[in-house]
Image (cartoon, rainbow, N blue to C red; front, top):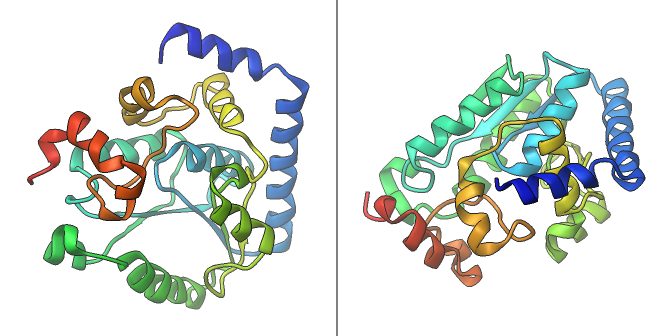
Length: 229
C-alpha cells in the first residue's frame, strides 16, 4: 500500500465516526458472546472477514475459525497459503479448514458447491456439534443484495448470523486494518491500483459467477498464470 493511502486511512481512524463504529462492533460481539455458547467466525481471507476475525479474537481467543477452501482452480494455492498464514497471524488457534471434493473433480465447472456442500451439509453438521452462531464479515454498503440480507435478519441456514461490521464503509475497513497493522492479502495491493481501494474485493478467480462484474477480465491480466491450471 502506497504511503498516501496508508496516511489517509490512518487519518480516518482518528475520526469520532470511525471510533464509534468500532465501539459498536465490539458491543455487538460482546452481546453475542454472552448470548450464545459455541460461536465460530467465518473467515474468507478478505478484508472484511479480516476485521471481524481480529475483533472477535480480541474477546474470545479460542473461538473456532472456519475457512472454506474453494480449491486450486478458484483459489491458487499460493493465495490460499497466504490466507491461512494471515489467519494464524491474526491469532487463530482453533482453525478449521473445510472443502469439497467436487472442486477437484469438476474444476471451474463446479457451480453452487458452496450452497450444496457448505450450507447444505457442513452447517447442519456444525449445528450437531453444538455451534449456535456465526460471525460473518458482511456490510450493508457492499451491495443491495447483502443489504437486504443483513436488514432482514434472516440467516441463510438454521444457524444465526451476526454481522459486527455491517455499518462500516470501505474506508472504515481499511482504516481498521492499517491502524491495527493487520495482515491482508497481497491481492489487494495488486488489484487496488487498477480497480480502486473503494471497489477492490477478494473473490474466487476466473469464476463465471463474477463475469458480470468484469472480474475475469482483470484476473486475466493480473493472475494470467493461473488461468489454465
